[in-house]
Image 1 (cartoon, rainbow, N blue to C red):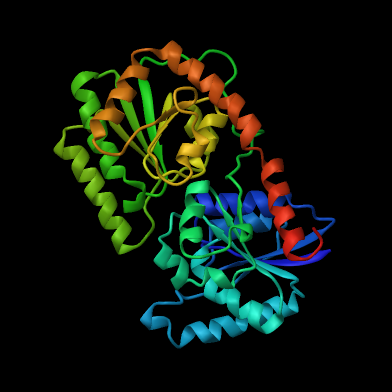
Image 2: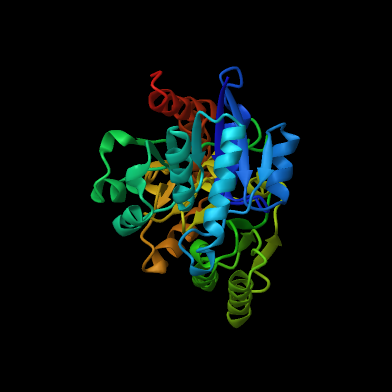
Length: 364
C-alpha cells in the first residue's frame, strides 16, 4: 500500500472542504493507498474520521504568512516532516491550498510528490504567493477556479479539474408526496461573510413584499470567533430590521444535512460549494450565482438557475417564479437528481483523484 499524508483545513468543524476530504479518504482504494489525515485542531471532524477508521493526528499548523507565525511555523513544518517520514509517506495532499508552504517543506526534505487542492477562487497574485508552481499537481474543483492558476503561469497539464461529489445513498429525495403549506427556500453553510447570509436576508425581504407564502431557512452556525460571531449578530439584526422574524428561521448547526435539504423546496447559494450537489441529490432545484463551480454544476433552466449577484431583484424574481409554480419546481428537482447521479458520484470523484496520484507517482 502507498502511504499518503493529507492536510485538512480544520478538525473542529465540518464544512464543505472537510466533507469532500472525508468522502475521498473513506472511499479511496485501501488495497492500494494508506491515508493519514493531519488536522490543525481537535473536534467533530477528527471524531468523524476516527469513527470511520481513518488514522488521524492533530498538529497545529499556524498560518504560514501571518507575522505571529514567523517562529512557530518552522517548528510546525519540522514536526510535519517528521510525521510524514514516520508514516513513510510516498505522497502528500493538502485539502487547503493555504497549507502549500508546509507541503513544500515535506517535498523538499523527503523528495516526495505533493498535490494541492484548490477549493476557493484565487487571484493570480495568490497563486504566486502560495507557490503553486512548486506543486507536482493541482486539483481544482471547477474550470473557473483553474483559470487564475493558468494566468499565473502554471502549466495546464499540472492542473486537473475534479468536481465536488456527494453521497447519493445518503442524500436522496423523499419517497412519496410531500405536502407543505409554505414554499421553503434555504441557504446552507457556516454563517460568515463569504457565504453572504446578509444578502440572503435582503433577497428574502424583497421576496416577501410580493409573496408572503414563502419561508426561509438559514442552515448553519457561526464559528466561535469574534469576526463570525459579529457577522451572525448582523444577520439577525437585519432580519429584525425588516420585520422578517416570522419568515426566517435560523436552524443552528446542522447534524442531519440530508433531512435539512429534504425540508427545502429550493436551495439558494451565493458562494458555490458542495451544497449544490447535495441539494440536487435530494431532488431540489438550485439558484446560484456565477461564482466558482456554480456555472458548471447547475444546468441553467433545467436543474436550477445561474443568476447574477447584482441586482438581487433577479434572484428574488426567480424564487417567486418557482414558488408560484410548484409543479415546475418539482420537475426541475427531478432533473437535478438525475444529473447528480450522472455527475457527482463519489466513485467518479475518487477515481479521478486516484488517477492524479498515479500520474505524479509515475505509475500512470
